[in-house]
View 1 (cartoon, helix red, strand yellow):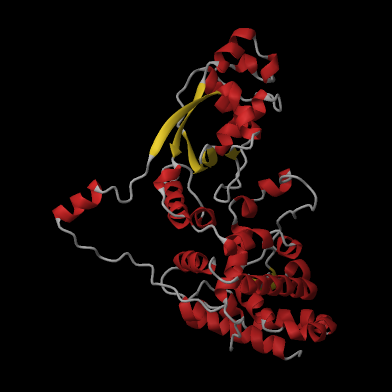
View 2: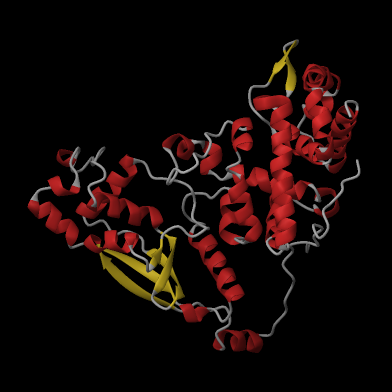
Length: 395
């Protein structure tokens, strides 16, 4: 199957290997003495009763692109408040000074918003084990001495100062490195969460935007974004694919898969990392065209197959039935093939009943290609060619 790329879409990727560098001890000492790759920091402490104004003010960015989508439960927020009541030391938050006296929250967003929300009386404490008598109370309902005790506590911070980086590119690299390292010992980041932190840029933001596409959400069982709604509603926030940013990865996979056979070396995770890193520098015209292509392709997939667009018709214990969830074994080649048939949309839509009827037999006849876990290049090309021939029969 010949894949037609857009003008300017083709990328050139390095192999991702770390080059060998041989320096003498004197050269290493000189590098250290001259301050290469050395971060300039300072520390600060914030009284808890000032956090609300910090969160709502203009001097602190509370949701830079590299933050995760996880939202703390009420019990987890309550546990933080109980720790503060008991004066349990908390790890510092990390801030980046992107302009003088203006900051991004690199790590600690959940702690800050949990404290601010408590001071705004937005939730009741629950699940406390050491202070169970405070369960059900909001900040304004706490006994006087307990409130005064909390008000005396501080959140400490480590601030990466503006002068650490000489250029905007250096600043981005520094933030990415620090974010990756301060999160390496905590809750494990999923692959796309790390990409979102380490390779923010125009393509990454486009993938985030397109992850709200209604048809993508419906085909992958993700509660859709509600236009005009501030924030993220609870059903969407609780969805695993949304929380781990896998919906964003699905968009990235569509773009990267178009050049996979030319560029992919090593693991898929590494390939997607490198593709996103370089793809952030695609021209705006190419990104605009890719956005249209993705929207048209996912729309066509939904028009033809609705929620089952990326389901696999499979055999279990001698019986054939639809596997009741989508799989990338279908998503990747189906999206690629349909993206090459956008000009045939009207014909395909007219023949939708025939296509839906024939797709079951297609999977039965080619189950060996789609049903296994084989993801080598030959197997992937086989899936593409089979689906391409199937769609071509209706054009």
